[in-house]
Image (tube, rainbow, N blue to C red):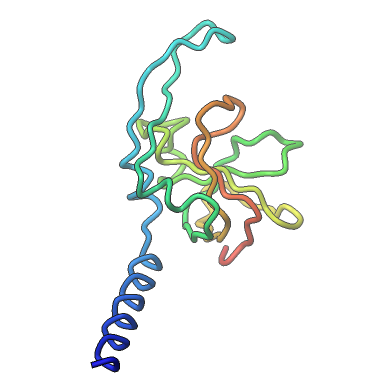
Length: 147
């Protein structure tokens, strides 16, 4: 009986680990709800996120994401922006929403990219609700997996 209980526990933990490794970043980001609120500093309405519990559970954990490089970070900045879509369809130039971009802060020197390079990175997830100088989804300590 004890062996059966241990086996069931092991299977349950294995399934949980498998489910977590299948985290789909873009899909999870898309479930974020955005509400317009007046931002006094700029004198205009901005969209503020309400993150799902599923997404909040991933804060501080390492995720992998693939996206297209778009050159919208400051030239002297230490991060890049990846988009779910190529530049012609991205949040800045096309009709996509704020859930379709992620800021990537690299652990080491910032690699060089060309517009629409398809990039895969791994880093720790951070969610941003109130710093308007940055996007809502941020990867910290990121490393380049594939360019």
